[in-house]
Length: 205
Image (cartoon, rainbow, N blue to C red; front, side, top):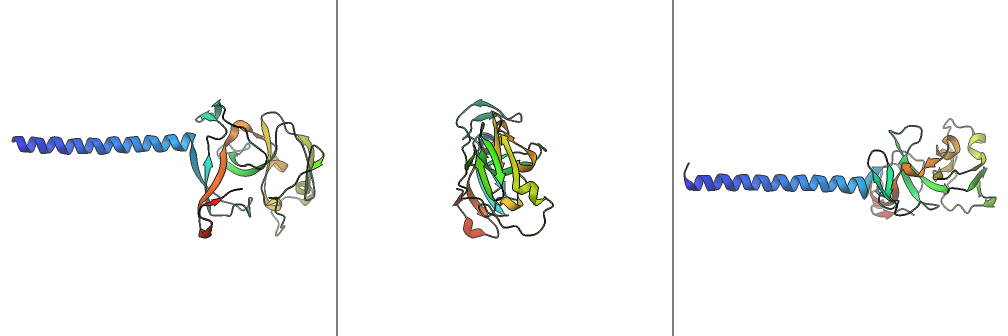
């Protein structure tokens, strides 16, 4: 092998190494962002309609409530705390292999009571601009169980959550509270939606 061939071989190896290093860095950066900063989710059900529709693809801010240790979801650096009306993604308490998305209604220490289409927090009627009531069809949940819940007090480090589509949401009214450590993060934008493509870059309020 002459000198030019050796130079070309080294050059090719150098390029391959550069590409490989760039690919590894990109993968590590993507994993870091997905683990600690932002993660994408797709909405599979209508429990959050009309705020979120089936087929919406959303971004969730994972940093907003603090930095967590992956896999065990233990917060090591607190950043903020959930607020009422936040739309949050969390680990479903009854099946940790599933993620749910709902709206925060009750905070730690709140006393919650549901009376028909009205929500009371600490005995005061809660202004509920996001609640949608449109009962169509039978989803297997008795109306009495859906329309009358509580009163019950939200424990420390837990949340009471509900879907915006109140008549078609399986939420804290039925299976209880969400541990704050189970939060994945807060949904903040719809970055793609199909077939509702006009919702592209629609902010979640």
